[in-house]
Structure formats: C-alpha cells, structure tokens
Amino acid sequence: MAFTLALGSVAPSFTLPATDGRSYSLKDFDSEYVVVFFTCNHCPYVTNSDEITRKTAEKFQAQGVSFVAINSNSANTYAEDSFENMVKRMDQHRFPWVYLHDQSQAVAKAYGALRTPHFFVFDRDRKLVYTGRGVDNPREPQKITTYDLENALTELVAGKPITTPLTNPIGCNVKWDGKDPHWMPAEACDLV
Image 1: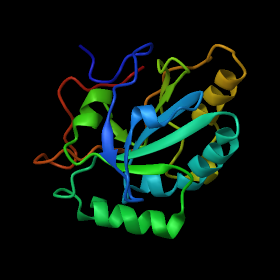
Image 2 (image 1 turned 90 degrees about the horizontal axis):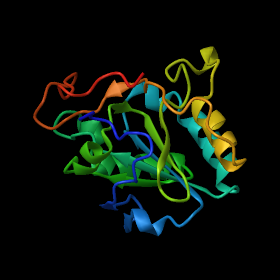
Image 3 (image 1 turned 120 degrees about the vertical axis):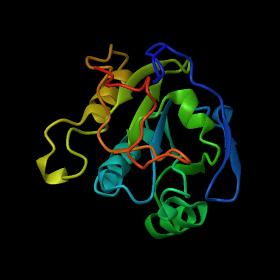
C-alpha cells in the first residue's frame, strides 16, 4: 500500500489542538472545499513560501475554500517545532488559517505526509483531488514558474477537472519522533 493518501480517498478525520486555544475536527470545516497542509516552524521551504500560501489562501477563502495547517514535526527532533513556538509564529505572522498540532504524528501517518509543506486538496465530498507541492520552487520564491496549488484550486472552484492532480511535494522531510531528521518510512516514495 502506498504511504501517501491516494487520489479519490476520503479525508481522514482528526481532532487536534490549535494555536488559538481551541481544538478542531475535520467536520468543523464546513466550507465547499478544504486544503489540509503539513507545515512547520523552521523549514526554509515553508518559511520562504508562507507568503505565497497566504496569498493563495486569501484568494480562495472567499470562494469557499478552508485552509488547515498541521505541524506534525517532532519537537524532540527540532525544538523550533514545539507547540509553544507554533503559538509564537501565529502571533507574529497572523496567517489566515488555523494551525494545528499533531504531536502523536497519527494524522501525518493517516495522510501520508512526506514533506513540509505538503498540500492535500479535498472537494465538497471530502475526496482528495490534488496532492503535492504548492509551487515548484518554495525555497527560492523569485524562481517560481508554476503555482500548482493555485492552479488546482482555480480549476476546482470553476468545476473543471484538475489538469495536474498529483505532484511531488518539495521541502524538508517530516521530522518523525525518534528518527534521524532525514529519515522517511520505507514505503514513502515519489508520488509521480
């Protein structure tokens, strides 16, 4: 079985604490569409592309798309990825999404998150219609030529089939607890 959630799969449910002091479940996001993405506090691929993700979120929230960020990285591997630092990061940047903490890493495993960032887009039936990268060069935004997430969402909200539903996420590995920072599960592989 593939590690990463397959296209057409139903979004795995979750209930996780957020930086705003509440807990959220998947069912709390009753918008037409939902983007779940795995992110963190320290990864340069995340920090250098967060403003692009912000613009995409702001553009599509008015079109019925919710954005849900999840940090599954082990704070034992990278102290910067602690919940306390998540709260500080949201206070500083005020991103237009909820920021959830997956301390057990169970949600990352259920979705098959490979890297930070890794995006999962779900339709109104909460079936996966896009997974992979946000852009083709998240570490060096000035070199971006393809906005994969924005392209997928543009097609989705227009009721069109997604031209490129699967891309490889580009970023740092998810930091699995008790493992080397560069470790990936044996069954994890490139998506395309």
